[in-house]
Length: 229
Image (cartoon, rainbow, N blue to C red; front, side):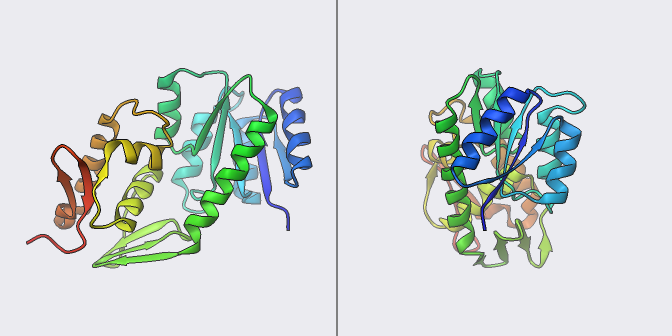
């Protein structure tokens, strides 16, 4: 069965160009002309991937992305943001609300198809090992949730990715630059304070188990394989 892509784009020529190239690559394609329609179709169709324009009528792409990532039933759908806003702060904002990739306009249709294929491969690889246990923590990648002592943690998409990566690599120190690349997808270390901010929020949510997230001075962070004494 062909993988499906939902294109949420209000410019008909751009949507048509994307559909043509994705169809040629073997994808099934669905279209939405505005943010509200895109949100409704994403919830109803559960596509394998969403290509989402930012500047749209009815509802902006940022609001659509945030709504999808806050909904457990759609949080696991990867999103590529497509927009004319290409400044570093715009990309950061996009990744902060849960986008998995960010493609500025004008774009190469071939490159976008390749990015879509690569993103789907990463998601499939990540989901092959569905569950990870580490002491009182249980990561369920398929359900897109982490449980601590049986209770589901209330995490944002980025917090889920960050904590999952640290648990998956437990006992091994991860530099801030590595985390920015593997969690946020940044090619360059734009602002390592982003990592520190998210680590602080994660520790608050872990409560009595916050000490599991260890700071390695001058190096980065790691998830302790054993409960610190």
